Length: 132
Image (cartoon, rainbow, N blue to C red; front, top):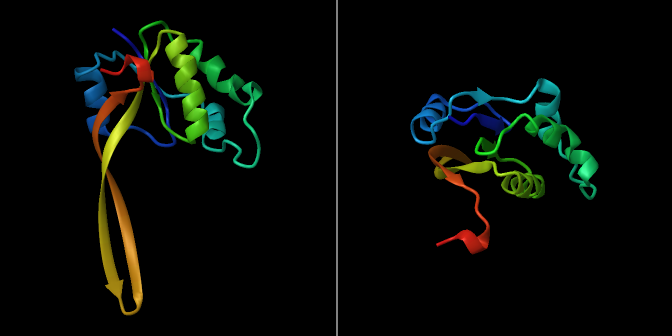
């Protein structure tokens, strides 16, 4: 049974955990240590990202064995780079597919928009040429 390594900016919901266990057969869900999680949530946006930025993430993912799951979501270019890293190591990278529910309220001349993300399912990241 694979383990699921979660590199997100939040904890999984109960439904997401159940899906990982029931659909993907995940035995354990593993979160990064706090210092790695903090780095993931503060990817620099004002400079080019280099391999040096990824040392903490790739170091943590060295614990993952071929066939383990990696849930990746965050800053787009960092997510892309770690998805590539994961695919090349034989890991199974996933993202959470969600639907957006928008609620709009008007209070006098102020219009507030609230966007709620509802988890639908996990989806595998795939190379374009591997799509059906």
